[in-house]
Image (tube, rainbow, N blue to C red; front, side):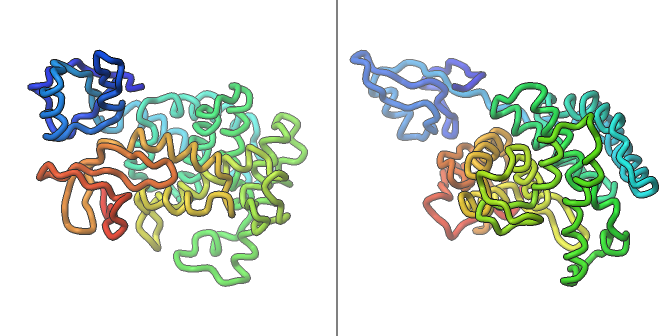
Length: 346
């Protein structure tokens, strides 16, 4: 169900509009389904059927990132930087600070409308580990919210996401900040961060075991190919599955020194292709379904050189949208795999 819609005379309909409520005949037959895209042919049919007006979805405006959200975001990043520095210096996690950050700042960000759009569009010059920790906390909290977990559980997911890389505070800076590919030995050192993070938190009674398991297990994979324990699907905690999906998605869609950030369409398609093998299917689909809310309405450039607007995404198992080109033609990328989205124009 679309939350906002307007009643529009059939004679005033424009191509590209989306049907917000099913159009039903006098004999109770569905003439047009909810979500159908208006074309010239649709308009002709509605007029021939004697349908005088239909409800169409109101497009959501794509606002700029609000100064308020940007201020909270930057303040939170400064606090995360301070937390990591304290762990480097003292080999101890300031739990009270982390909890305050999760409850008083990150929860506000999560409940802000358009947060997914903002995360993708915000440019910051903080160290990657800090921005990544914040983004994973936000995404893990959103996954908990979307799947209906209690406030207490959501706080576990947020805190676990915030601290999932805290073990990296113990990794030598020359390895952590290396701009290029790591050697096998350096990668082995990096891989210690999940168990080191868990060890840092093991004696913290203020943090739930579920949140600690999210830190320990966020690199475990459904088929047992992950680390540090090689656990399989049913043995991996829910928190770890949420943090893992958030970790992977943000890593792919965030700018790095050695590569450009990946488009959301590309990132989620890669993840959907790994469902059931390495990634948890239910969590992947939850992220995919909710990402669509911010992807619809995006102006995009396609690999064939055409520009247009994403108007619909029908297949939940892919992130290949229907695009209304600037010339009014509709292109369903799900039916033409030779064409891809290559840039976001917003």
